[in-house]
Amino acid sequence: MRILLIGFGAVGQGLTQILRDQADYLREREGFEARIVGVATRSRGTLYHPGGFDLDALLDVAGDGRFDRFPQLDGLLRDQDIFDLIRMADADVLVEVSHSNLQTAQPALDYCRAALDSGKHVVMANKGPVALAYDDLMNHAQRVGKQVGFEATVMAGTPSLRLGMDALAGCRIESARGILNGTTNYILTQMEVGMAYSDALEQAQALGYAEADPTADVDGWDAASKVVILAAALFGQRLSLDSMPVAGISSLTLADIEAARAAGERWKLIGTATPDGARVEPVRLPANHPLAQVSGATNAITYTTDLLGDVTLVGPGAGPVATGFGLLADLLAIHRT
Ligand code: HSE
Image (cartoon, rainbow, N blue to C red):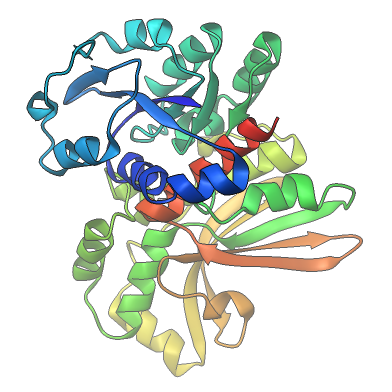
């Protein structure tokens, strides 16, 4: 499978590491061989080679952010216009991992459209296009006979969407409720042991959990975008971020955290989607509530269903390799079909 990668930040590098480190296992176990033939970023330029890149060499230039240091090779093209690259690249799939823009979804949405129009599948961790243009993308993909994978957009590689959309198919899902943002859960967990909010946020950024602009995390918009994606995928609802109640954790103080602890409770940022609506808000949960016990960048989702009652999935919700795995899961799904 030939991959064109748009974006080469923490998540793009996480996927690249996985493809390098798991190459033998994936070949033996799944018959899956991946080659990255192109990498495009708006700030560092582009690299394209139809034969594919040595992944160590790519990760090496990612370290200091300079594509101009990438060794010259026969057939290597640099610094193309990204749309031209998407259209001309000999690739099977576009992997979109540039920063999520939750206002316009651009330019990622147009990159996805250009990829579909030029016969490529699309797999993304970028939440903008799925949250803002779900129908548009799915209809477009169907029209051109290609697939759009977005498992990595909700709970990183923890298979929250596959659980709801595939494994629970046949149940009526009455609600999906959970901890959907790793950064805020990490901050709340660190504040419980006395760390200042700003220090905890800095750590979450250093660990590759936070969005490029972390206000999207702490003000609840990242969790809200995941709720919108769940509502679209599970309930066929078309919500917009500005039509639902959204609150984050930035106003919570150490005193609030301590007051909850003294009462045997914990603050959690909870996102909820039902067939009738959605919301994101900080909630004080009893310490023995299953969601209260989920700490650090771990996420959790509880599907309430008619046939099984509650089904809860807990797993990593952010981070380069955890999110890279969500992309790999979609690439394997395409490979298997
Ligand atoms: N910033 C996001 C989070 C990354 O902290 O959950 C995963 O979507």
